[in-house]
Length: 435
Ligand SMILES: Cc1ncc(COP(=O)(O)O)c(C=O)c1O
Image (cartoon, rainbow, N blue to C red; front, side):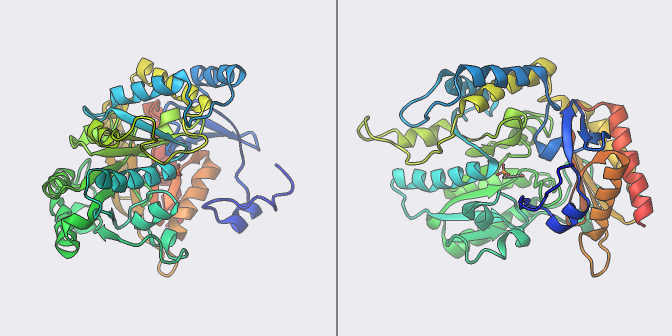
C-alpha cells in the first residue's frame, strides 16, 4: 500500500472512511481485479460501467502501445489524423440509421456539455434562436459539469453549486415501485410519465425549448428502466413540438442493454446520443456526441473557410484514444459482445431476481446486463445499508457499486454464468449479514 495518502483528494469518495480502510486495485485481467493484498476480486461493475470487453484485452493493449510509439499527439483543430476519421466512421456504422456524424470529447461529462451546446446552436443556425431552454429529468445523471448538473436531477450533485444554468427545467422521473416493483425488463406502467413534457411545453412554450436530455436507462441514480412505451411517447412529443431528443448513452452505449445502443434495444431513435466509457473499453479517456446528419448539415453553411462550430477540446480525437477505440470495436465485433447481453439476459435476470426475498430487498430490476437491487434504508441513516453490503462484498472478493440504498450490477459483457452466480451468492450472503 502507498504510505502517504494525504495529498490525493479522491472524487465521489468518502475520503476519510477510505483512507482509514483503503481498497487499492493493483492489477486487472478479464473479469478480475487484484488488490494490494494479492486478492483476486470479481468485477461486477465493469470498472465503472466502462470495461465492457473485460480488462487488459491484448488487442487493445497492443494498439495503445503501438500508437504511443508511432504518434503521441496530433492537434485536432484545423488538423487531424487518419484514425479519427476511421473511428468516427466505425461508430456511425453501429449507430441507428441516420445518425452518421460523430464529435469527439474526452468524457461523458464533456459529451453532455457538447450536446447541449450543439442543440442550442443548431436551433440558432436554422433561425430559431429563441429555442434555448434545456429540459432534463429528475434523478438524471449527466456528469458533473455545469450544464450536466443543471439538467441532471440528483440533489446531492446540485445543491452545493449555486444557481446552475438558467433556463433549465425537469420532467418527472419514472420510478414507480408501487406499480412496477420486481419487473423484469421494461416495467409495464408509466408510459404516461412522458406527458410531463407537455406540461413544460404548456408552461414555457415550445418556441423556447431546444432539447430534452434523458438516459434511456438511468444508471447512476440506481438503474431505472424506462416503462414500456415511455421513450416512444417522449419521441412523439418532441417531434410534435420541434424539440431535439438527446439520449445520454454514456452507460447504455456499447452493448450494455443487448444492442450497440439502448436506442436500438428500445426502438426509439433520438436526435443525438452522448457516449463515453465503453467507446474505448475504459482504457483511454474518450467520449463522443453522435448526431443525426441533418443536425450536422445545418451547421455547414456560410463561407467555407470559416469554422462552423466554435467548440472542441485539445484532446478531442486523441491518437491513443482513437487507437484504443478502434481495437475496442474490433474486439466487440470479433466476440459478438455488442449483442451478448441479450443472449445472457435471461440467466442474469433469473439470478438477480432470486434475491427478491432476501432481507430488506424492496425491488429488483434489470435489462440486458444491468441490474438494480433496491434496499430499504436504515431509518435515519440513508445509504448506510447498501454501503455496508458493498464493503462486505468487497471483503468476499466481489466489487460492485452502490448509489443511495441501491446495489448496481453491470458486469463486463464477457461474463459467464458461473460468475453471475458468484456475484449473486456473494450479495445474498452480504444481505443476510446486514439484516
Ligand atoms: C449517463 C451518464 N452521463 C454522463 C456521465 C459522466 O461521464 P464521465 O464521468 O466520463 O464524465 C456518466 C457517468 O457515469 C453517466 O452515467
